[in-house]
Image 1 (cartoon, rainbow, N blue to C red):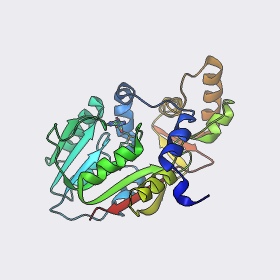
Image 2: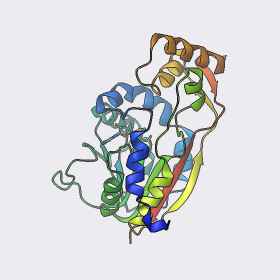
Image 3: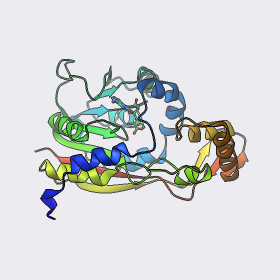
Image 4: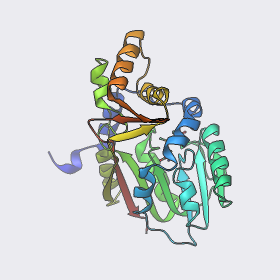
Length: 270
Ligand SMILES: C[S@@+](CC[C@H](N)C(=O)[O-])C[C@H]1O[C@@H](n2cnc3c(N)ncnc32)[C@H](O)[C@@H]1O
């Protein structure tokens, strides 16, 4: 078999059809917006991403699936203008609130999806396009092609490595088989088939995570599993309780066996 005989797009679709989690809808993200913002805005992920991206003060950035502004807000402090796209209205209102608090007035938010006609919405090309942890799309090749077309200088994508944010031990604890679905290696290979030879770096987070309460930790773990049964809910609660350590008021430390890891994939468009 030759490398060029492998249809990476087809393999990606096949692997995606076997994943054990359901794609989240915008209403799912709406419900999660406030807690996602609280735990991600100042997370170590932000510092690791910001230390790797190469940007200049007079550049513009398009942030697709921006969430509550995890990256859009720090980027706005270092760049001329940020256009932040997301299909969740609540994520965008979190972003607006946090941007105001941070004194950033150079972020334009637009409620739209990957599949919409960005040209018709008046979204033009930017110097840099980013999509961080937001590549949950039906057509990966199409999304990558779109990012490439909307960036004059560079594209940065943050994609899952293996289970990514999911905790495989949780699935073992509730007796479910876990198939994470395709990860970053498909993205790198699909880019190769598009003639794009991307750089790959990794962002590894701590296996210890602080939550403000036991309930917050439980919510975060419930988010990983679709259609929990009553028995699984009990098993999930026991698993979370076993991993949680109350360090002080509003400080609950959760220890995972496997640290979440992300791939940072980037390339120059010219
Ligand atoms: C895990 S959050 C990532 C947020 C931020 N980029 C970060 O790295 O923290 C995923 C975000 O992508 C958005 N999203 C998911 N699918 C989308 C789609 N098809 N179109 C637009 N936004 C989408 C969600 O609403 C959510 O805000």
